[in-house]
Image 1 (cartoon, rainbow, N blue to C red):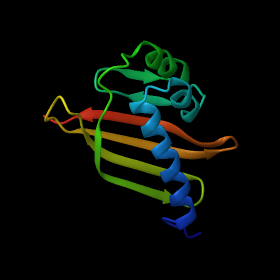
Image 2 (cartoon, rainbow, N blue to C red):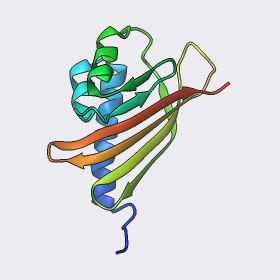
Image 3 (cartoon, rainbow, N blue to C red):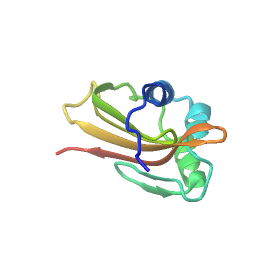
Length: 126
């Protein structure tokens, strides 16, 4: 079996899902953020200051997160698809209030209900 990398229409689908996530994140649209994470105990999110295991923990974190200071600028975003049902999205970001560079990684999987994040990692450099 040969795995097709970066099938154009799949890249477009994941890019649209990633952009929807980014709009929801900076706009604090918790309902969309919750929708885009896979609703399953195996979903995880490692944040700058928290390790969240399972959809319920991630959703609870979103509910308690401050809604201010969410604007950011992305750079060096790389979306790679593996076949038609799995992808990674990696990006760097900066926020207006700091010079620090952040990094974000997502693993996306096509589920019956659409593209969902099954694993996420956010960190800050230096």
